[in-house]
Image (cartoon, rainbow, N blue to C red; front, side):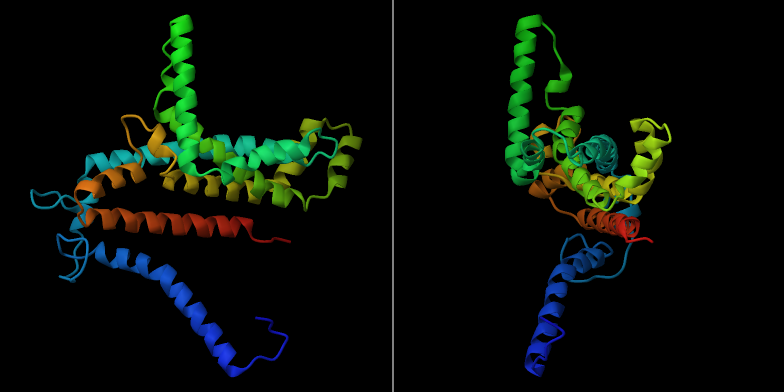
Length: 284
């Protein structure tokens, strides 16, 4: 729709109707989850039987709320812990990669940049399987050759961090790199002319300019890690993350506590996304 050109009333109303239907399609499932999380019923679906907070706070023989479910709380803690480590490592490596790919004299820049983007192209299932097989074979070889049992190479917390880091760093690299393209290189040159080292010019000049993008990229990497399922399920050990725990629960039984968890996740992701949007907005 080109606003500068005249359009017929039918086109305008059809366009508005399409936009409204599109956003209803996106928002209605979230609204349904938010409503059913407070439904006084043992079923995850309608009919509505009244308002209740039992699925958040109850701890009885009939009902167990979110805060009383130790297994669910533990999986949330593991997801937050995993996301924090993934976001931290991805941010550090992603910033370094963004700075590296902005160097004009960097050899094999095109090939390495293409390789850095491959985790976004490869399906998460394939990525999880390939990391699992590679780490398992490496662990078996090291154990047979040297007699060392490296727990890191078997399905575990740190293998999940490694798997999610493989694509988290790419997101950070792209977000930071997009802002880095707007950076005035003469500022770094001025710092270097004043006897600053290359590292000092990056730390005191470049990084402050990139700070909004860095914070936003950290939030994005955290959210991607927190909600990841298709890669994590192949690398998880005995302690599942929240998406894996919810999947295992919904396979065998389904209670409104899942709606309560989903409601809190939607609220958390919405707040984090708004924070990321605020940090990445254009500033003079």
